[in-house]
Length: 293
Length: 236
Image (cartoon, rainbow over all chains, first blue to last red; front, side, top):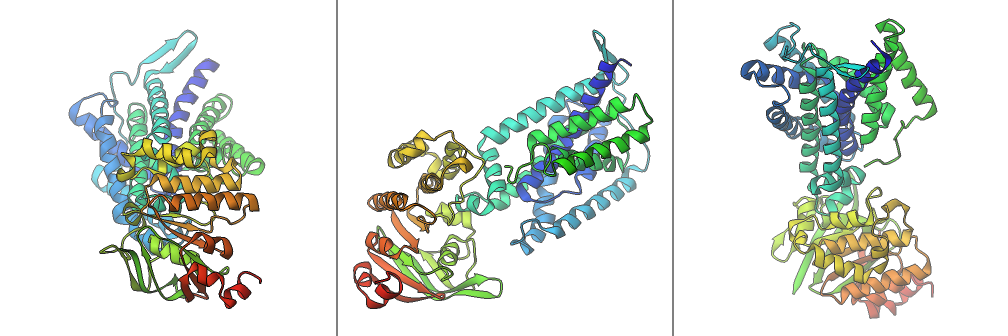
């Protein structure tokens, strides 16, 4: 594979990492909660998308219109039913630790439920374009990855516009910047939190449909992406939207380029090495700042 | 007509009671001030009225509605809007965005353009700095923004928590001018201040808060001439 093709593949995987990290960074930026269930919720999105694809035969990308609302509701209810009571009990704590444990527990429950319902098999949505390769001059890239890249970039762009220019987006940012001042201005914080969690989860559904045509689905698939999403958000700056996307692309590129010169296990070490380097030189991440939203 | 009535509230944080048996009432259209030293409980009182802190006992009424169990955003919706201590503007948003947040309530949203005009007219500096990011502004400008943002929410009762804190004497005068203009606009004002002299000159009635209870209350004019006030707060 030519170098440019390697870069293209890295970009596409990186943009999907970025999308997953975007949800994590959104939830952290607004609620100051690290969502350990992000990976498991991605797995759930992939399972639902796969199941809908198998049942309807529609293109996975069309399924976004069904899976995204489903996952929004799942996230919204998770916040309302599980997280809110714990958060209320610790309402004077800026970064509540017990919620962290709760989301970690949610991840374990979801993964084991998936194991029970779907079994431990590896499945993939073998679509008509799953084995197709696109060529742009000297650059060749798998069709599924290329479409994934486009979808990830478009959704990240739309999400950014939503956050910057819609009233709900503005209210989300205000809540992230100063929770008490936001509620003094009439913003319903409880509702805003649930919306933030819902959107953070809905973003995963987009990553899920982008992944299923070329990535195997199994109950612990979320763990792979979870670890990377953590590296990505810390690299880009926890709470930063452009940081999440850029961090994702950096990790994606390192993985795919390094894999040309060394074994896959070594590329993982390289990813962590870069991660450590950023932590040592700029601990707040590339786009990190004391307050971010 | 009585607008806000606070009946015997105790309030504080966790096991610590800061306010003891506070009773207070405000008439429609009045400008009143609550003065007191650092740590007397002024901010706690405003945050209790705003619904950020729940009172441990007692009642708070707005007109004929009991509000001490309502969440903060509902209280803002009813027209009690606070300009918090230390301004608390949204630091990464522009002046314009901050003002939009102020008018995100349905009640205020429909009159956004009118209110924007009113705020820019009252605080021309904000119009000049419309696209500047909040945290890059000076303390005085941030205070203007915090007041403007609260006015965008169309308050019936505007509560200001130490608006003169940390400002130069010149800016303090500007801020007090703005507050007295707001008071003439049919908006009821509750001003909390450490600058006793200025606050009492601006208001019709005053309450003196000491260690969590009201030690004195009455017409601001009389209080300004009270020997204890003169000695303890005015340094005369």
